[in-house]
Image (cartoon, rainbow, N blue to C red; front, side, top):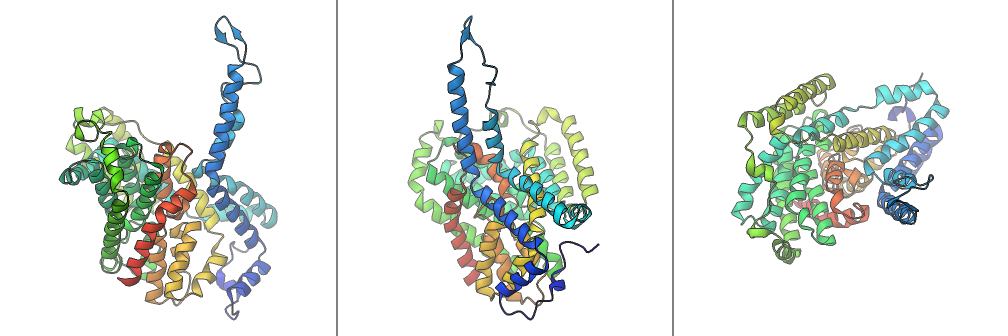
Length: 479
């Protein structure tokens, strides 16, 4: 049985002059390449339309409630008509189809069915079981659960509170502290953890004050971009860097010299630019805060968490990072963490499982689809010079996880140092353009979605992140 997808060198098309000729040749040799790309395109399109499904679900739910109000009354209570349930099943189905985290998993079903029909069930099982790595999905689930616990969030909040206090502890000070320091923490505790903590704190200290629509989307886009580039100070924290570090011999010192300081400068410039544009909005937000400071959770004021519990959580996070690519040790450590969580329940909040599991499901679906797209991504990347390559990586990242883009670049032979820099810089700079552009984005989307009445609209996120993306691109190009 021939492995699928076939190795890129098996196409024997190095003599072909144009990308179009290469793509035609590869689609002709293996027609399923085209089928997989079309299903992937359908999934991406579905993602961009997810907010419309939520809108339609709300419309159906309102119509259903209107019918319930007209139902007959018996002894002062409303009697349900048999065909009318308490909620609308079609509305729930549409709401499910509008959940960004499940979309790629949904589209795995037609992909797997078509693969089994065209290539055989054994080939399909072999691809799903052995040709796809779910390490990143497992890692994100575990790190999100641990980093969203009360001791970790409390520690991060204490650190950020110190810097916010220096700025007066107003909404603007919290906003700057979270969006500057939160993403940079990603280089130490990994980007998924940084996204989790930053999104949780933004929800408490910013979105709870009900900012305007444009300000809300601008902040969301800025958060996604900053987290995407905030993990490049080390070689293990950002998924797109992790994919290439071993293959290209990149170390933490290398990342600091070639990417880290540029990313820090870009984050500061982007934050100051957005702050200047929306500075008047902070005055309105401050007027909603009582006693001149942001309200904090009552638990944070009443209960002090023993330092040894916080230290234990940090140790579990370190274990998770160190064993990200060893599922047995990763899951084993997570089971011990759950046991520790139960023992120290008096100092814990509810364990957050729903969002991490959904995000893991999203990533699992994404890597299944992404593993079948290399036939067209590789020739696109290999035919570009450094500057066009950077912009090409930005564009591809918007439609495919940036870790997949950088991983595929390791399969391209004879990349120069300038080309390697360009593809990674483009991948991390474009990581905030869409929910699917960077692995931690679904975590932020899941946590902040409730602050957007119709759900987070992909176009709103795109427009909110474009200025920050442009600033980071210019920094990587000229610094």
